[in-house]
Structures are given as C-alpha cells and as structure tokens.
Image (cartoon, rainbow, N blue to C red):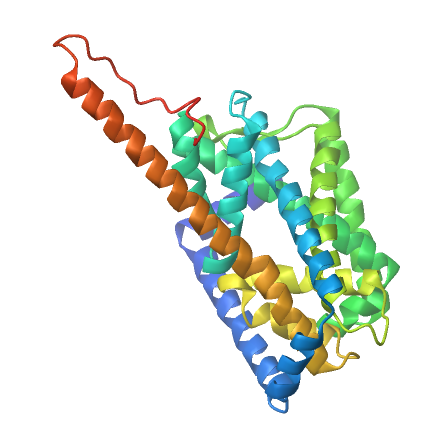
Length: 349
C-alpha cells in the first residue's frame, strides 16, 4: 500500500501534476476569498474603520504587541530545535533566533515563505558552513513543528467548539468535531510511530531523521505556544461585544492563517481577511476590520521592517569585516596569508 502511494506521488511529481494542482488550488482559494471580501466590504464605511482604529485602547494595543513579541520569541525555537536535530549544536541560539525571525517575518510578507524564508536562512547559516541541503533540512523540520502545532491547536479547538470552524467551512458542527477527533488521533498515532523506533524520511544526503516521541511532544508544545500567543494578539484587538471567547477566536484565526498560507499570497492578503470576516460574522464588521488592520501592522509590517534593518546591518558588518581581512591579507608578507573565510565567532553569523 505504502509502495503504491509512493509510486503514485513520484509519477505525479515527474509529470508536474502536483505543482499544477497546487497552482490551481492557490488561484481558487484567492478567487473565492476575493469574491467573499467584495461582498463583505462593499458596504463598509472607511471613515468608521479609521475612527475605530483611533479609539482602540492603547492598553490593548500594547498587550497585543507583547503577545506578538512573545509569539516571535517562541518561533525562534523552531530553528533552534531544527538545527540541533541535524547535529549542528555548535550554532548558537542568537544565530537561530536571527535566522528564524528574519526568515519568517520576510516570508510572511513576501509570500511563498518556503522559498523566500529558505533563501534568508541560507544567507545566514552559510556563514556557519551549513550547506543548502542542511538548510533544506532545517526548513523541513521547522515546517514540521509548525504543522504539528497547527494540527494540535485546530484539533483541540474544533473538538471543543466545532461551531467556530463551521462558520468558515460551512460544514455541520458534528462533522467538524469528527474530523477534529480524526486529526487528534492521527497526531497521537504519529507520536507513537516515531516513539517506537528511530524514523527517517528522504534518501541519501537528503535523509532527515525525524524527532523521536519525547522530542515530537516538544515540537507540538512549541507550535501550540507560538500559535497561542499569535491568537491572543488577535483576540486583544477584536471587538469585545459579543464576547465569543478566546477558543472561538483562536480556531477562526488558525484556520484563516492556514488558508492564507495555502494561498501563497503575501501575508495571506485577502484570504486571511476574508476567512476572519466570515468566521467572526457575529461581530461588527467595521470594528473587526479595524482590529485586523492593527494586527497586520503589529504582526506583519513591524517585524518586516525590523528584519530588513537587521539584515541590512548584518550585511554592512560582514562587508566591512571582509574588506578589513582583504586589506590585511594584501599588506601581509608573501606566504604569510592564510584563509580567513569562517565567520564563526564573528557575532553576526
């Protein structure tokens, strides 16, 4: 059975069917989201939205910003975990944090985060003699942490409050609850599978050893904490009336985030917003839109600006040090030159 599945996937990949299906799915998601946004926003009063933004309590904005910061801090452990899983414990946490923060914040805004984030990671990790294959493994393991956390949050949230998901997918709550239980059962099965004995995926140099049972639980915990802080940041900014509760907002938020991720649009633009407006339809749409715009500033634009500044600052330092090394090498006596292309310990990665 597994061999038949592997052959089918290989055939579809060779014929580029999977890529074409992915493009079609992305276009379809974006088209549906645009249609929904049009119907949701055609009667929105822009002046009221701006007024609601201005009236938002500074305390709530500050709490939301702190939650975003906590979420990005937790997100740095995606890379910390992945780098250690491929056996590179010599790479310090500060490099993991820089790579994770900049790759995710830039990937979120530019879109196609697997490729854009991977390029940023390679630029940083290559200074520590990590190859493109190593970076690909890091991206895979970090993505695994992301998806395990998402599935855990969605599974538990929908099982507890299936109506929240029904608002988005228009599926009866009892079906959503069954699907959530299936997802949770699948997660438990996966943990047991990797707990029994060491597992790996891929072949040759692309082979990746999967985390064992205890480490997989750590992965799931990291993902849950990250998403919990992000959902809390959104919860601080949505209208207080009606008070639907944190779980409902979290389920809608994670569902909207995954739809935006699947669309590959920059920042999930249009798709995330449409899903949030539909999922929280019981709220005043103009107040909700005001909260969503504030969230975009805090979660997308501010980290993106900081990341660009950090990378620019890093490149200036690396460039200055390279020129200094080249000048010293040129002035040194013949035969005294020695390679100095290892940036480890330089403080910039």
